[in-house]
Amino acid sequence: MTEKSRHKLVIVAIIISTVPFLLLVPSPSLWGLTKSTALWGSSVAGYIGLSLLLWQFILGTRAISGLFFKDLAAKLKLHSWLGTYGIVIFLLHPLLILVAYAEPWQYVLVPSFKNGYESSVTWGRFALLAILLIWLTSAIVRGAISYRPWKYLHYLAYPVLFLSLQHVPDIGTSFKADAIQAYWICYVAITLLCVALRLRHVFGFDKLAYTISFNKQLSDSVHLLRLTPQKRAPGLRAGQYVYLQMGLKTEEHPFTVLDYSSDGDLLVAFKIYGRFTQKLALKLPGDTLLVDGPYGSFLQEPSVPPESVFIAGGIGVTPFVKRALEQPGHYLLYANRTRQSAVLRTVFKKALGNRYTDILSRQDGPLQAGEVSGRISSQIIEQLIPNAPSKHYFVCGPESFTQHVFQELLRLDVPPNQISLEAFSF
Image (spheres, helix red, strand yellow):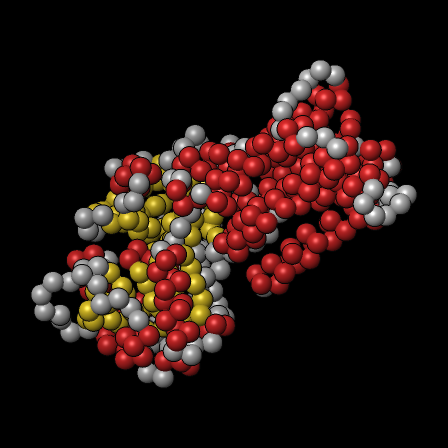
């Protein structure tokens, strides 16, 4: 089964998992603008919101979704979409409660422990406040928050799920139905299984130890790591990536595998962006890294037609290295600020000849053969690639770069199904 088919199957599974709540929650005695209708709508919205929350947990946890999918980017986009727009369903639950009981808006936000019922309601209040904070920082002001604080705030989703599960049994009027209780127990069991898989990942049971063979500086900000497996090694294909971790208590970050050998050695090129890569650049031969993966379906057979065009921005060239060097019939357009920042350009020029072009946006002085000045555009692509609209394009780099190139390719009348994108971002 292809990754696209699996992605569609997940969407169908999400929809199917919410349908039983529409059927199992007892219908109101009288439809219309009534208390019973509001309570029915509140129960349905609450259960569906809980279901979507569990799906977000599954899709956003690599230790779980990675068991079934290699293309994690598509699953993370679905996770993000559910988090951005699923808030509407989640909010309907407390809003309809306010309507049913004519309570002031403060009721759903202000904690109270004056009795058992209010304590159970308060677990839901805490869950609501936490999910509003997650939604605000992820969907509204994500661009204003750096990666690390956003990540730690995102971890609030774990207690939200458990608070929501705790909130249901003691106060849910529809929970008295045996069918609802059985379905809810299934959700609890799935949640516990997901937590077990997550803990398995946290403690490193699905990660492999590698030893650094060398750590070379290729330019002012780009390094090349060679990693040797201490025991077994995973199977890899061109264009895939792995997550590197310096220890069980440290962060993990994804890196594309530049090349790999039959005995399991990996070559990873990285650019120094932040604290993690700064520390990685200081690692010495003999140091150990934990490797999780491989992941990704970019550049996978049979999806790379002959004479495809690879367009790379900066360190985004790494997925193309092995394919370009072993199958030199492809074209490679490599966008950088200057000639000096183009990693491995000499190797590419030797292997690809006139099918390789440097596109330099800030190069001072005269251009050399095989160089073009400016930002990549539809005019440059048309000038460099024969019969450009008929080719298949693979684009990798920062997300702003991939989206810009995508729009330029559309201006050339390249069909969208002939454009594959891979963005380097968290």
